[in-house]
Length: 57
Image (cartoon, rainbow, N blue to C red; front, side, top):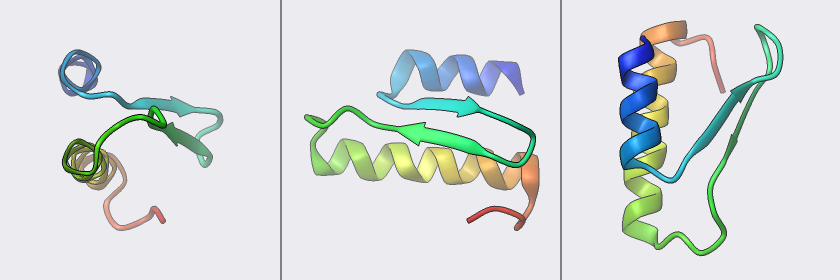
């Protein structure tokens, strides 16, 4: 949902872009520390699961 994406933009250092319906790009800053990276990747996985079920890598 849009509110989840807005929350991610405000709280996490993640850039998630839908290039096409089947191709998504996710990038993180190179200077992000491990605990922050882990939290970010878990949040991205949660968002992908909510939108795409188990149909993502």
